[in-house]
Length: 401
Image 1 (cartoon, rainbow, N blue to C red):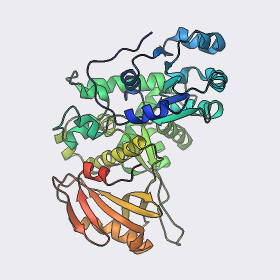
Image 2 (tube, rainbow, N blue to C red):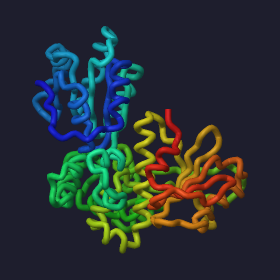
Image 3 (cartoon, one colour):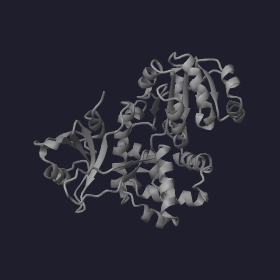
Image 4 (cartoon, rainbow, N blue to C red):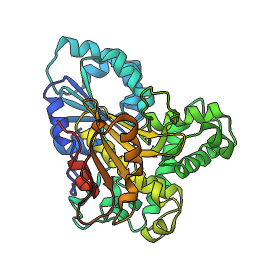
């Protein structure tokens, strides 16, 4: 079965990384949430590869019950789609790869990383490169929509289907996405006994995006046990729907917050769950600030995915309320980021940065940014340097390579 190329294509920043990895490893696994374009990316880059999807239950059954004959029947090189459905296949793939280490033999996609990664790490360590893909970044979306505004993109979200122009009501797509996610990715988990509870949990989690995570408070609002909330949070995190940002604290005997902050990786999904479907509703919402922070952190995460680096990211907050939204660690020093929805943030935005420098010394700060909606970057402070920038300028200032 040959791959089919779609007519419309949005250039993905991860394309080069996929090519480089496929030239170096016998197998490459492209993982991430559903509907972010994993299969489409492989369709675009490898149109001559054979293709098989394990969404086909007959193919999945054969791969699990007759793995050797199944692998014998494949025409290589091949794309194997949705490999999370065939966990028993990986140890047999290992045997095939050990016989022939030619690069690029098996390109795979998988959506349910909470079930997938253990099998890959146990069976294909050193044989399979792993690359995570999220929904579109703002810059990727602007490749086909150069005038796309930051707030418009924040509300709409980065799922590729929403950028095709074929959908008059993105809310319809999101409703189907949430239903599919609940039914296909959650129903088989032992921790989920009632999908209605999990649906309430999703919306309560979206309400907290960009804020400190309290399992007890979230459990109380949903009406389930705290341990259940912890299990569900781990599901969302492992499947790429949320990111938990850990606090930074160097032992100085200070009272620092130790709870993580919760972020939806795609701010548009959070907006949908909160009933925010247009920019004006976002502007009026008391959640506009945390959602802007969610958007900024999501763009930074995508940068490090493309760079194939584990995100060296933290936040910092004291028990007295001083906070830096995002710390990017580089060689023992930090790039510090404050997220402000304003178009012209002033020096009041520097309180957290100054408190951090006061605790750890100004030498700990390499550069400060205030990520805002400014149309033109400008300097807020000279030493250490702090600039108000838009998201594009912020991403350009992050470590790469």
